[in-house]
Amino acid sequence: KAGVTQTPRYLIKTRGQQVTLSCSPISGHRSVSWYQQTPGQGLQFLFEYFSETQRNKGNFPGRFSGRQFSNSRSEMNVSTLELGDSALYLCATREDPNYGYTFGSGTRLTVV
Amino acid sequence: QQPVQSPQAVILREGEDAVINCSSSKALYSVHWYRQKHGEAPVFLMILLKGGEQKGHDKISASFNEKKQQSSLYLTASQLSYSGTYFCGMRDNAGGTSYGKLTFGQGTILTVHP
Image (cartoon, rainbow over all chains, first blue to last red; front, top):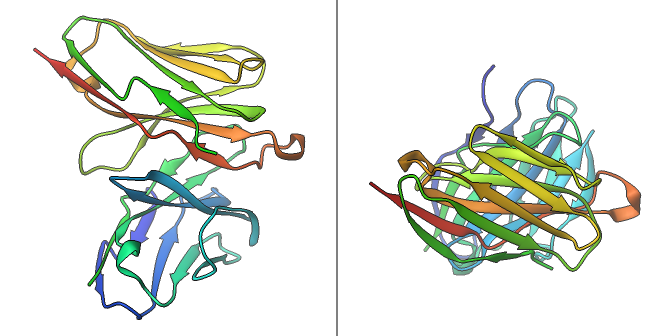
């Protein structure tokens, strides 16, 4: 089974720009969650999608948005980038509510 | 609100035991435990559903006290490969479904020396 695929692996963007990150879950995994990981804040929940519907949202500003497609692939978008958005963005997918998550390797975003 | 993990860091010698604790102020549906090695993605260890069950495999086990909203991870006879950062994830009981938020604690850094 292929793992969770996140693209791109690395990104360097300038303040004010926007960015789109992609996550392809393991086949059969319909739930996709996004997390922001930084040394100071740890793993912060962004949002969770299931069957193309956002189920939960974390405490992030509206600049952070996401969506899920009918094939369960998900994208997250960050508009008007700020320096503080520099982080590792992790996608996590699961097959069933009572199963654990499989994480992707993440996208390392650097905002300069 | 983020679950609270303790201790923040643990240093062990091979063969020693450790316990990592995690607590929440919210009613919980499930507790997850993950280990992350430096530069890698978190890896799922186990999930505990409400009901007070204890799970484990090999020398790593965990318990979940639903009433106290607490969970503990037990590592016995530690090995060098156990080194990493351990995260608990707690899914709240939103609407009694399994779709409450999964929120992670701040992590416990475990270092095992030969």
